[in-house]
Length: 159
Image (cartoon, rainbow, N blue to C red):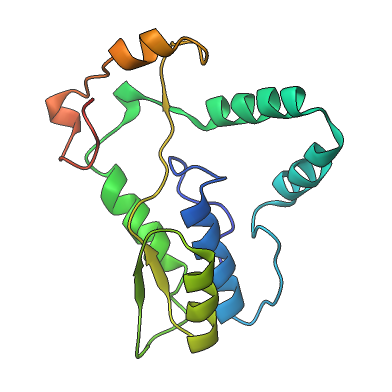
């Protein structure tokens, strides 16, 4: 059974995690699954086309902020847990003759589905919460977030 919800620290609207969920569902014969996310997200995404672009941007920003993780909550286990989540999506496929690894790409995902092959993304989105206004570009470029050395195994960017 496909787990429709990524690891708690992986972004829900990340294209790579969405492609993993959709491809895994297709390989399990589940057919069309939309975004392969919990129903509430699918409803929100569909409803967003009926609101103004400004309000839509604000709502998606709030949603992203809700998914964001505080720097102090990052740990050495996050990378391996994310990798375990990705590979767990393909547990029903014991053997394969091919595998796709790389950046999120819809064409590659379609090809992988056609060949019955899993796709392993090279990156997954991890939203990190910080107290900087979205329109303050100068602050954005001058702000550096340090991850404590004891919480980092090199999997996260330190700038």
